[in-house]
Image 1 (cartoon, rainbow over the protein chains, first blue to last red):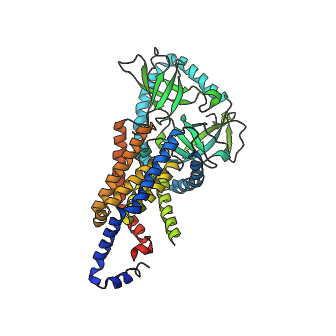
Image 2 (image 1 turned 30 degrees about the horizontal axis):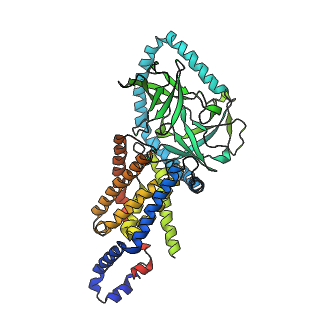
Amino acid sequence: MATKRPRPRMGNVKSPSLGRPVTDDDDRTRFGRERGGSSRTVVGLLVAASLTLITVDAASGEDSPIDPARAVVGNIVGPIESTTATAVRPFHETLAYFSSNDDLRADVARLSAQNSRLRADVEQVPLDRNRLAELDGLTTTAGQTDYALVAARVVAMGPMQSFSRTVTIDAGTSSGIHQNMTVLNNDGLVGRVISATRTTANVVLVLDTDSVVGGRLGSNMEIGFLRGRGVTSDRGRLDLDLVDHSVAPAKGDVVVTWGSQHSKPYVAGIPIGKVESVYSTPRELAKHAVIDPFVDFTSLDVVGVVVPRRTQGDRLVINGLANKSGGRR
Amino acid sequence: MNLQRTGVAGIVVLVAVILQVAVFNLFSVNGVVPNLALVVVVAASIARGAQFGAVVGFVAGLLLDLAPPADHVAGRWALALVLIAILAGRVRADARRSPIAGLATVAVCSFIATSVFALSGVVLGDHGLAAGEMMQVIGIALLWDIAVAPLLLPGLVAFFERTRPAELAL
């Protein structure tokens, strides 16, 4: 087909030597034609359509008319993303195997440093025991609250070019996952579900600049708000603003979720991170703290979604009761 | 026949978007991945002009705005990609002559598209980021797009030229 098409054109031109310039000429006329008339209308219409879409979606807030379209696209594209992610997972694991040697070396260095630090910490055991009792109480509360988990895997991650930190997980409403449910993993709080289709759900990470989580300091039970920085460096950070301005957070303090009404979007007592540094600006009295989250957001894989205990779905629901199998978190 | 060609172009766009969110996150640098959809739009514009490029750009942008992990206001990527399609259409005669010019087109388009997206976010107050971090993201995205463009652009331009409607070839 590709070889056939030039022939009649050569015939029309009646001079084979003009074959190459003709295509260029052809381009030029097409290029010229595109600058006027109908094509300009089409392009203008598309720009106008984009602007209208932005206006409609931005102006309507929570109840956007774009949402049905989002749901339709999600229902179609979501399963394709899940399949693709499953297909490339062995490749991902092979890469991880090759890079693990360096990681192990780094681990040895890190662990020996940690070991010497821990040895120093042992001297402070009596002081820390008090704090530990409080923390332990908190985690027990988390275990006793009435929730269960549905396990899911991360199949897609929004590009940073979109300046938002969101991921897609491969479980949706068919597994009992709905909007505003807490998402966590073995290490701590991951984020919350912002939308769910039948087979997938979108999760906004706590790192996102639009994410605000109520947090509580483990040592003195003070409450505050954690905002994501959306930062692009290898480990994201959160900013903590305490409600009580007179309290200064201590470095190394653990921050857990404070919990929302009816446990939506966040259930109480989920560890978020620990205080990395404390700073204050001359303009304000309040002290701000930078929180280093426990979760490594660059290598998210298996996550759990907190669902009501009686949830029925096409996936196994891990009940909070099964503490002995380590299913507390 | 025309419907079939449109379908194939649509599948190329869909594949680019899915690779971008589901596969390339394994190689992401600080969360930034190569913007394959953008390379497809630039290739479409270079091969068949601003009008066709703008249509491909609108569809690809809409898909980026609506497909699962997206959480931002819909239409922002659509606007950014339509604008770069117009730009790439303007310089297509030069961009087709030398590979370097094609690469430069991708680089400029990448910078403009990510910047337009970032600015629309600032205007709407949607997922704002500090200016310095935005520049960092735009810079990494630019390097990524320059890195993947030589591998993809010639093939994609050839593909879109091959699927050019028969009446234009006569």
